[in-house]
Image 1 (cartoon, rainbow over the protein chains, first blue to last red):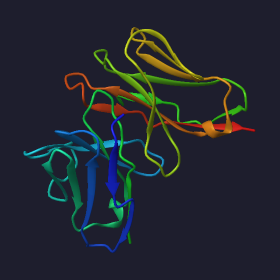
Image 2 (cartoon, each protein chain N blue to C red; image 1 turned 90 degrees about the vertical axis):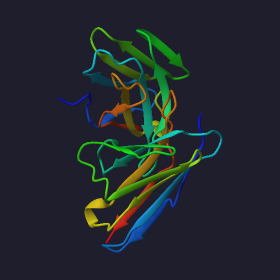
Image 3 (cartoon, each protein chain N blue to C red; image 1 turned 60 degrees about the horizontal axis):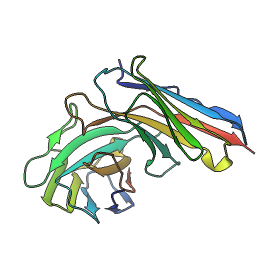
Image 4 (cartoon, chains in turn yellow, orange; image 1 turned 135 degrees about the vertical axis):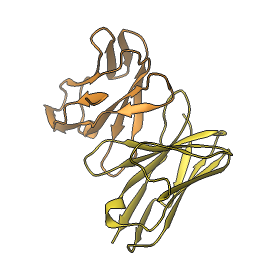
Length: 112
Length: 112
């Protein structure tokens, strides 16, 4: 399966700060990357689809100006949570677009 | 109506027993079906994929698909305490086969 890394694995920040999460595909080139969010005891919810060299596509209800996605290369996609608030505390997971969905290890964000 | 539905559980089975996990989906056009295991605080890991009606076996795991009934299940034989986790069912989207919808997961407890 696809090997994907995420950094950081966990982050704690103060309300109002911005947090950048990196997702790297290590053994293949990902033209498309999915970003998911998972709140405690809930399922994965697709937030957006990032495409290398073009704008991301956001799911309904996800603020594109709050969750900035950049997919500048075939091996790196980033998600920036801008002006984070406690309700943004969640588990953020990336997944490259392949026939089968493999997931990165996830980033646990806690906003105080 | 949710695209993918699962009983949240918890499902408790004794060690060595068969655990049966069920999932229903709403889109008849879905073609790909997956079962993931997710340990607390970790990212989902793929267990099984199934694309055709019938059974697919892999070690202690058997996935069963019935497209007419829009039903997919996962059987775990000889359940072990290490199988205790949340199991997520995922189904690909109609019209966008690389977009997946996840159930809310079933929590399985295997008691020693």
